[in-house]
Image (cartoon, rainbow, N blue to C red; front, side, top):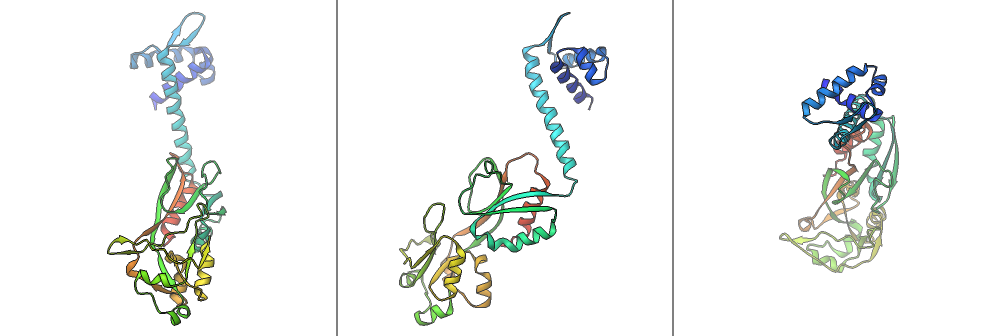
Length: 295
């Protein structure tokens, strides 16, 4: 702490332009300021100031050292502020961007709201690639890999897609036994709104990816309509398991071709890179990682 105190004296003297002015600000004698600077110069073996009876200016080495000391003291102040803040209850507005399928994550989000009533959520549902920093989001939840060096990320969970259809649809047509059977079925596809491309069904055989030109009976840019159409017997669709968990459990949709699905999807939470994470973002990241069971 004595060395940090000396650095603070040096910064104040450099910014004030004289030992006398610095001493008034610091509540020390000008002699004490001068001695502290002299000890500092002796310890590093470099002259920091050009001194005369009329003026005092920084040497080239002193200018470099001033920038370094400012950064050190600033980071120390920031660390102390963050440590102090970490003891306070998380609160305030938390802006979160979620994919359009984010409605399926609402049970976890509702549980978070009950656990942290002092945090107000502003939820933005979109599949477009938002600029987290420019648009002022605190956190973003997305599937897949996001390559942005300005962002930190944490894996929330992974999943394997499911091909599903209703018993009423399958009854007159029969159950597809191999991927090629899908060529003779009505296929309901998801289209990425951000690119306009159809989401590829992750079909494979013996570890080799299968690229089939599947029929495109119906296309939707969100998942919920595909669930509804599949439940009501309009065709076969391929969706993340958490999207159809309830329907599979109650029997309104039946999983198909489970031995021919290989690709794994990933949910990630991303937030702006920062040396110190605010309490509201920290608890949100930890809570979602612990409670979003999509594996």
